[in-house]
Length: 311
Image 1 (tube, rainbow, N blue to C red):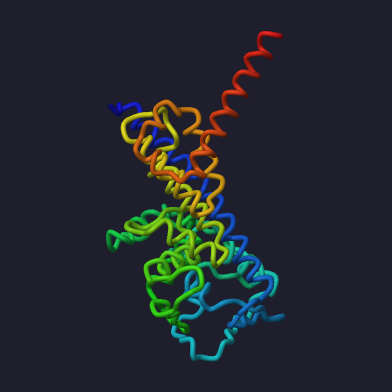
Image 2 (cartoon, rainbow, N blue to C red):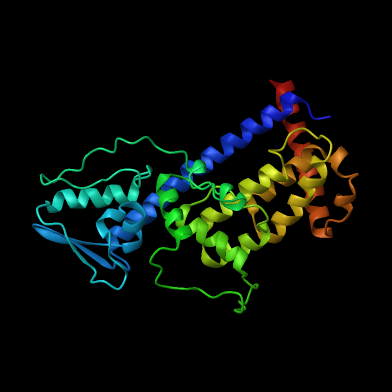
């Protein structure tokens, strides 16, 4: 029987894990975009100030400061003149635009003629509240206001200049379908901290691994830890079965950190887990691995008890 206290404890752990993941992904997204700005990789817009110019990215400007490109299309000349603005102020403005956790679409951030950037006075929005047009979008939680702005640009499909066809393409490791591609794009744009309803965790991990999206694999680990392992409580109705499922799944997907946690939990509660039908369905390799983990746990426990007696 799951008590109200256990439910509250689970919810608190879910909030804690998601917040930790949110901070990590938010920092990574800001760092990635700032590196993009510094390296000018694929930069397709020149912003000209009085004393020079800087290269930027049309997509970021559309997502974060659309007033700068107001009335322009991707076919227009990629030069925007901001006469009267100092280069130093423009540089700081772009740095803020590419890295600030706050959503900037609700306010006009324009560098002033003295080279400084006015502070953002609007409150930081809750990213979870920014996309509620449908059930699937409501589940998307960008890691920050920066992610929310970029994800909003992707969902609007404004001034897109490239299309990616995946349904007919067969990759060497697996077939990447449009559902998985949608999750990948949502993560790459908005650093979402959860998976949308119906997403296949295994397919998302395979796709993320292929493209080197380690942050998205962290998201899947959090989802599996929450939905399958329930943050590893004491054995209660149903959790033994799902932890064993997660043990097998993480082994197959190569999610080593979570796999180790699952194996450790199974070893700690082997009396109640080994009698589960799901345990009998594990591969011989995992049976041996679990037996080794139980043996190591017992040896470690006896060693600690012996040291306590000696001391």
